[in-house]
Image 1 (cartoon, rainbow, N blue to C red):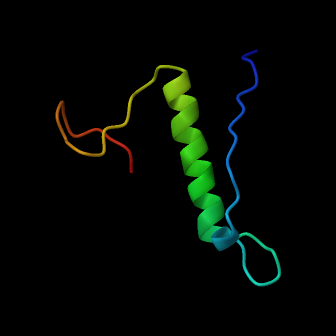
Image 2 (cartoon, rainbow, N blue to C red):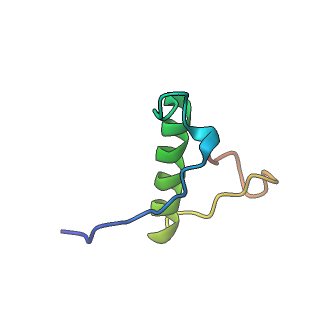
Image 3 (cartoon, rainbow, N blue to C red):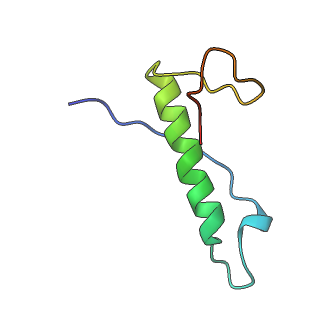
Length: 60
């Protein structure tokens, strides 16, 4: 079994609503950021958001 992947992030005041809950869209963005970091750590790909060189495959 593969080892545990850990991804640390900083929760910003703008990520929370008036009663201290994380906005759902912010939570999904955190999940996407962690997924990309995990894939990159495994060497699966290096996302390139500035260009489409090398084909039509990229991060969505």
